[in-house]
Image 1 (cartoon, rainbow, N blue to C red):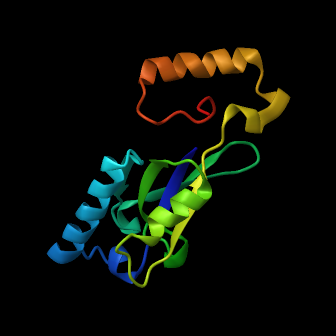
Image 2: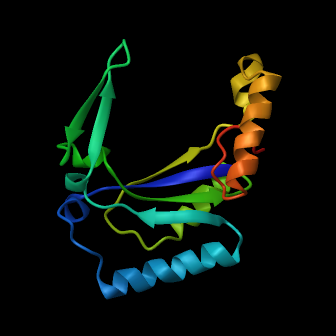
Image 3: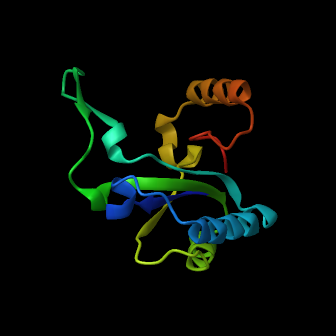
Amino acid sequence: MRVMVLVKANERSEAGEMPTTEELNEMGRFNDQLVKAGVMLAGDGLAASKEGKRVRFDNEGSATVVDGPFAETKELVAGFWIWEVSSMDEATEWLQRSPFRDSEVEIRRFLVAEDFGAAFTPEMRAAEQRIQDHLGDIGGDTATRP
């Protein structure tokens, strides 16, 4: 099962404060463990929301662009991983080994084709497969991976 691990923003990350050398070393060691175990597929930190934009769509599909920064820091994401694990319990066990302090991190399962039921028709599955074939196996598919 693939999961996304969402590292929540805090006042430091939203202020654009970079991690210390020690914090970077700790996270690097943790990432090395994830890679060696075959768990980590991708991961990165994100710039503060002051550099971001939100696009809101109304019922007719009209878009409104809102420039950052965004007020609710606790609702923002400061970084992410994509992990391949056997279960949500395994993901939780890995996360509990991380070097985070005074943080909140969320784990969410990626949807797979079966989650969509009959609405995800054979034609849609074929179209999704064509997209994945084009992208290559980078861990970015949304519906066809078991």
